[in-house]
Length: 324
Image (tube, rainbow, N blue to C red; front, side, top):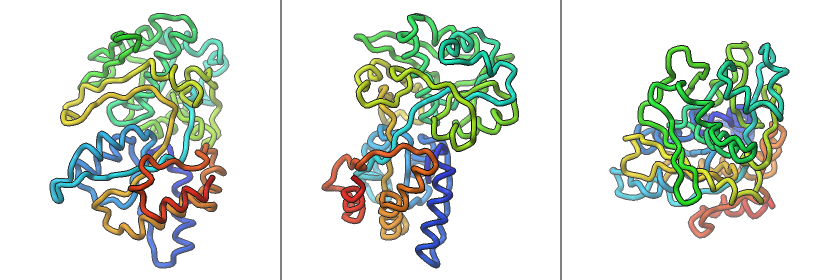
């Protein structure tokens, strides 16, 4: 089960793994990253491999919560293997396409007449990252109320910003619904916005660059200080934090600090076929898997980085070491 932004390469990965392992049927399913983890920890789906678009999600949702059936954490390790950056994907059918440029995009969004798509930050990492992008853009363009101007009146309960010790804290309400006549379209996962861009029902949407390229969409490249894609700017990204006022997360810390985008995977402790899961992960991190990911414009970490090498299965550790 994996983040929706990985649909294109993971369909190819599944096919390639099946070809190398006759008799194996790889069953795939995608959601927003938060939903992916909830399927394991709250909906009790038995999953062999979990892949999140944000490495930050795995410790609070899997390490710090126990499987009631075993009394043990849902997972004890993860391996970061890919990165990305946020862009503003533009519909080829939009009459405003030529007006959305690297120098004007933020003003056009704040003006309120652009139909733009947003992944729900309560369910998808791309959603809360889009809010971070807007807040970081305030500093980049010296527009102190950019996020507020872009979102004010668009939701029945507002998204607000507080300032705590040099950090801008974006607070997302428990109930997040767009207002009547809002120019914002909210979906559970960023990948669900792609069809609306292709049909012209949206003018633009925040997407990962890999997704825009996979679907042949024009996009506006955002400044490095804003797009969450550059290791050297991690301190700047960390000046923004998102808090979710979401009761489903009452037992964990529903806060996400701005950071460079990192995709991570793990094998749940209750995986139905842990041995096959280890083989699949080793394949994904190995030469053929990385070739498939790169061919689909997914930027890779070289080498992949386990958070705790001692806890990572041997097959996975070897694959990480060989991918440098």
